[in-house]
Image 1 (cartoon, rainbow, N blue to C red):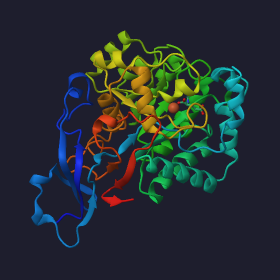
Image 2 (cartoon, rainbow, N blue to C red):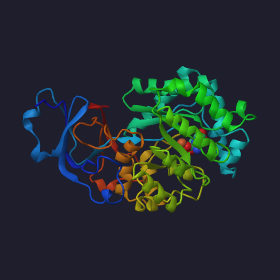
Image 3 (cartoon, helix red, strand yellow):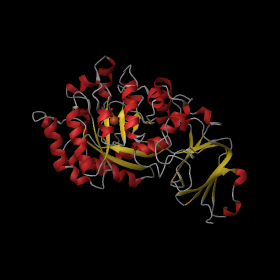
Image 4 (cartoon, protein in one colour):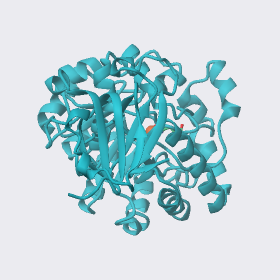
Length: 420
Ligand code: NIG
Ligand code: FE
């Protein structure tokens, strides 16, 4: 047997998230009892997990002088976090709108006045490719410190052909220049840009379908659209996703964030990999989605967004899970509705305001988040054959996740078998 290249040993507890169904995300009873290995290890060969188990079953013959040893005495090991919904690449920031928001202006009011997303579009169009890359690398560094080892990254602040293609290119380039894996999603249909205001949303998506999407085959796995008042109506969103699907892209949608327009159900019926936000999605609609998709579509919950937008309504995550709809949790990191990369905080708020149990929250930011970006075969759990993305947490037991509100419990991060 091949010698181990890295051995993380003597961990108080190892949370593997292994042993559940392999053909669909975790839901309902799957989350009831998971295995925690006491006094355990994780061993890697090159970039891949080779073995996981209790120290008593460690195969000492595979430890050689070349094996790098990492001591985890008194600590918890778990899979690297998977951040399945971010708007990673953008110019500028929206600090100037923070006070407007605090004085009571709503998200959609600020957008309608030419601010919000449109303010970031102006800053992004004005930024150079190098600046955008530098910003993206800075944010990826921040994610890595929080133990995030895979990041989905949406375009959507260009809203013209060249800038949108640049944003996808920058996301891919950023993924190559540092260890955190980046999965680009095309969100060219974020809002209608000023140039297309007179022609309207349908004309704009026709333009994207004609001139931009054809350039993105193999560059972006997913196509996403913001279905909302002030963004794209339901019928245009359906048409766009249907066409994108025909072109071979996986589907995602921003829907039921501020109103119930039926976007989640529509996208799930088209086979969407995930439906995101869902604050206004009803438990009944969630049950229909779960049934229709046989538990394949994941609802991505973004609990820091209602917090930051001062919105009382949070997605009824508890009811979603009870109705069979699998959930993931993500920050939605972006300059407008969530300028935070703290996925641990998002997990705490998901428990506090969406009714998730701590176990469900942890699964939601690892294995189910991996499902939400089509990477469940590669990451999200500690299992032989998966990429060796492992966190060493400064916690004595799994029960402390995500209890330390707003803290970063990460002591060490291993990505692809390399200690960062
Ligand atoms: O997921 N809701 C739409 N888009 C982003 C926010 C983008 C922004 O405000 O810059 C979101 O919340
Ligand atoms: Fe988003």
